[in-house]
Amino acid sequence: MLRNFSVIIICKNEERVIKRCIESIQKNLKNNDEIIVVDTGSTDNTIKIISSIENVKLFNYEWKDDFADARNFGISKAKKDWIFFIDSDEIMSKGCLEQLNASINEAMAYSENNEKLVFSPKAINTDDSVFYNAGRIFANDGNIKYEGCVHEYPVVTDKSLTLVSLKLPRVIVRHDGYEKEVRADKNKTVRNITLIKKILQEEPNNSQYYYYYYRDSKPLITIEEYEQGMLNFFEKFPDSPYIDQVVRDLAYHYIQVGKNELAEAYIKMLFESAENGAKENYHLAILYTGMNEMGKIKAQQKDILKLLVYAHDNVLQQEEELFDKGYIFDDLISILFFQIEEYETAYKICEKLDSCGYASNISKMISKLKVVLSPNSKNFR
Image 1 (cartoon, rainbow, N blue to C red):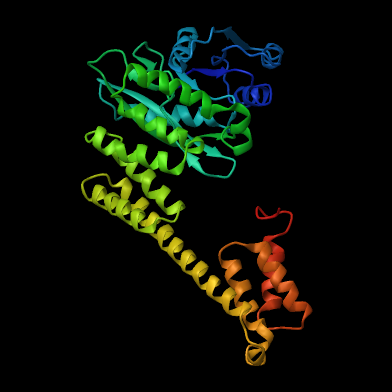
Image 2: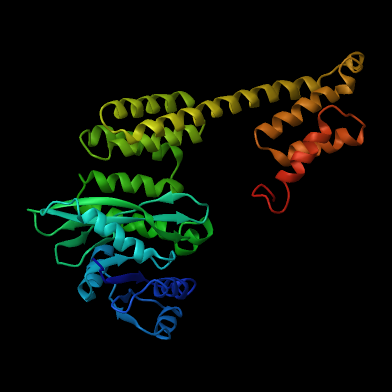
């Protein structure tokens, strides 16, 4: 069965990306499809750019601090069989709608009459990381709307129906909105936190938005505030479906800050959760175990580095011949700096040793460091 689509974009001040997004959609459209843009109050050239593109339906929407309401407004303007929400900082891949139609046909063949299917496309960031966000593709039959003023999510309007969320790995969009520099420009973090606070004032026992608050606030609050807020979750919401996500986040956080024993405790909880049915946690727990062990090794390397620096700085004159004027310490120190990713420091030590005629591993190390510190490397500064 061949379906037609209403592709909807919600945007504000997106002059940097809106044309690119629309053009990527147009390359996928059939004659019976439509593009709808809901502008929530742009003050830059966004509306001018949209107005210059043919066959785009533009609607102005008065912003109410409510993303769900904006999406529902977009749904009310859609005239086609199926709805597909796409962000303005996304690009629809070639053949996306054709593949989507095939995927819907496959899923519908196995769905029950009381099930409403909601699909999530595969979104690929510029660093090639992959994510699936809340469902945004569904039949335009009046049975689905959005709730939540931020981090909005689809719900069924008829409680006799069951919402079924499915991921579509072959339906691909490419995304750049959460690169660090782009995210900073949009100031999405502060905006989201403001809206989440509003929800929590009205619904203090909403575990979903309590979790979102600390997850989104992490870049803006202290480590101690973040950890305490997440730890309080277990006491406040022991039966919340977000417990697993809190455990995942804390395991990763403790790995990142080098609290390896605490990380181990939460990794153990992930393994236990996997044994109790949450199978998706099993491979994540294995990954985190590897990351945590590497963190331990790096911590040990830093301790060894301190000892070597101390020994190097305190070599006695009568010991210089034994230790090759201390160069043997420099050699090991440069290797350890390389291992802990202090590449520029390692390079300076290697250059010094090379100029002194000390061979050992220096020529190989310098070659490696030149690659790591080349202008094309992410480590180049």
